[in-house]
Image (tube, rainbow, N blue to C red; front, side, top):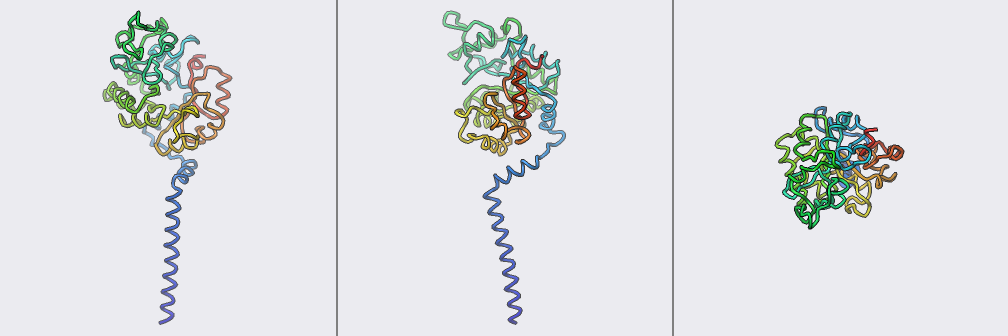
Length: 324
């Protein structure tokens, strides 16, 4: 009897040790789940389904060394043109990745035009980018205190006296006909509320064309802009801007924190200025290390392009290099 009790005690002790070990392992995994996920993701990159939007997108990224800034610069001197004329020229030259500045007119129509913070068209936008006289109290051309004009006035412009002013609907029509083109949406810097209104209007203009919406590189400059974009539509390709040190949100302060946020929120790409893409940043966010697609803007010098590519295999955002 004593021997049987001893055996039962030993057996019970064994199971207690096993159970305690499992509990300890479970607690450890829970506490360190974020760190372990990061290590797992860095070793085993989950492949996309062959027919998914992301699979086609990454294939296109691998086939294009440039993303064409503002639909393409022309004649080696005109940038921020944002014209369908330039888009067609670059597309016919074989390029499939484009970036476009999209903003509202004074009567709330989305057009291809650069704006800074809060959808303002600056004097520089009018004179240097549109090639138009800056509206003032004498001309009365501005539609609001934001120096906008109405849709009909904007569409009457010849950008730089040469190129067709373009609305978003026309670009979407082009994308529908050319189903291998991708467009990065540059919304400028907006609040959550403004971004939500912006993307809801963008989705309305798409008019149910999911094949177009699924080829937009959507998102924005802040985490709030990304959240608003996702509330408006379930975009499969989400991009987050890596800003200067002083402008980045606290949750994104270091490259490591930025990468963790992207992974935890299924953000597939980042864009940044060539001034912010340092070696320290490249060592963390470089595509071969992070698994993210990286876009660096705006580079128009071949030697500068080479120095950036030495840091990591990113896509170069350019006005003119594609035409050389």
